[in-house]
Image (cartoon, rainbow over all chains, first blue to last red; front, side, top):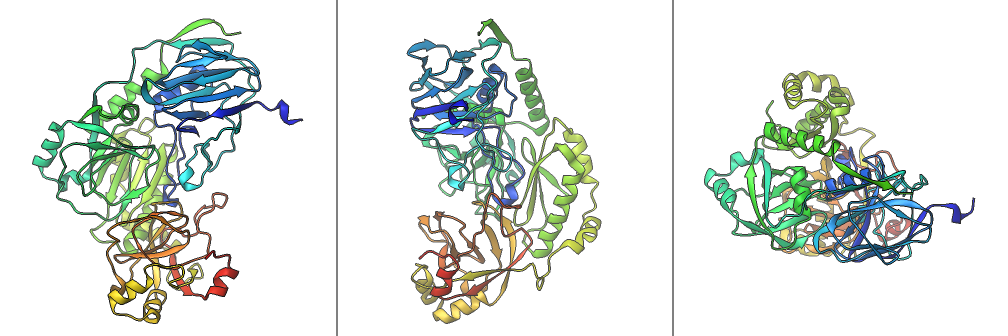
Length: 315
Length: 232
C-alpha cells in the first residue's frame, strides 16, 4: 500500500490552537494523568452523531481562530460548537450539518463570532494512535502534540455517510450563565455568610482561560480556609486561590490540588461555560446531588433522542 | 465511613485529619475493593493525602445503591485482607533515586543550607539519609508527593513560583519532597537533580513510583549523573 491510499486530512492553518480530542482518558488519575477530552462535550458528541460515528470517536477541537485543511479522500464532515463561518472550496456551508467533502476539497473554518471551541468531526473519526486508551492530546503532559501546519491527520476509511442531517436548535451560547453546582464537603468549613454572598455575586468570565480552567473575576471570595492537604480535583471544581477569584476547573485540570473548593459545576454547565466569551456574567446556584442526577439523566436522554432533521441523501 | 459528594460523579472519603502511611495503605485497600465492587460503573479513582475520591457512572449504578454499597464496607476487614500486599520499609520494592546534589543543577541548595544553618554535606546527608513514603501522585504525570521530610529541612514554598523547573529537579516544600518528571512551573526549593525516568506512557503502569511505595535518594557525583543519562 502506498501512502497515498491512506485517508488523510492535510492541515494548512491551525489558528490559535487545534488539537485532537475524544471523550477523554479515564483510569489514570493515580498516575497524575489528567482526564482531557473535548471541553464542550455536547458539541463534540453532536458532531459525532452527524457523521454517524460512535460517541467516543476522535475529532479536532479548534480554539477561536481560523483553521484550514484539505481531504485526501471523499468523506462526510460536520462542524459544531462555536458559531464560526465555514466554507468548502470557498462555498459557504451551514454548521451543525452533515457535509460532503470530495478528495482534494479544502475546508476553512473562520474566526468564531460567538463561542470559543469548534469541533471538526469526520466520518470514521480521526485515527491517530491512541495513548492509554484515548486519542486526546495533552501537550503539557507530553501526550501527543498540538496540530501544526503541514501535519497529516489520518481518518477512517468509511467514506461519506449515506444520509445527511442537520441539527436545528436555538443557539446554545448564552449571553449570561447560571452555573449549577454541587456544594462540596469543604462548604462545611466555610461560613454560611460567605456561601450566601457567593450565590448573590455576579462574576464575569476573565481572560485567563484555557483547557485547564477558567478564572472568573468579581469581589474576592474569602473562604477563611487556608491550603488543605492535596487531594483529587473534579471536573467543574470551583477552586478559590488566595486572591479570592474563583477558578472553574475544566478537562485538562491538574489531577490534584490543595486550594479550598466550594463544590463542582455540573458537566453540562461546564460545557456552556467553556463557550462563554470574556466578560460574560456568571452566577452560581447550588443543586443537591439527587437534582444533579435528574438533570444529567434528562441531558443524556435529550442527547439520545436529539431531533436531527434529515436532509437529502448526501451522495 | 462518611462519603460526601465532590462533584456530579464523584464521592470522596476522608480518613483522619493527618496523613500517615497506615492511612494511605487503608485507602489503597479500599480503592481496590471499590473498583471490584463497582465493576463497569467505576470510572476512575484517586488517592490524596488523607482522602479517596471515586468517580462513578451513576447512570449504571444509582447513587442510592452506590451509597448503600459504600456504607456497608468494613474498612478494618478490607485492610486486614489486603495487608499482605502492602510494601514494607525494607522491601526490595523500595525505589532508589540517584541524585546529583550540586549548586550546578540546584539553584536553592546553597540558600536553603544557609537558611537552615547547615553545611551542604549536612543537608545532603539529612535528605538522603531517610526513606520516604509516596502519599499521592499528581500535579503532573509521574510527580509523587513524598514525605515526611526531616524538620531540619522543612521550608515554605517560594514566594514566586518559577516558570520552568528543569526535568529531574529534586525539590522540597514544607515536609514534602518530590522529583519534577518533566519541565514545568513550580514553587518548590530545588536541591538536586535525578536522571531517572519517572513517567513513560508506554510502560505499565506509566509511573515509576506507585502510591504506597517507599523511595530513597542516593547522592551521586557529576560523572555518575551524566553516565546515567542526566543532563546538566
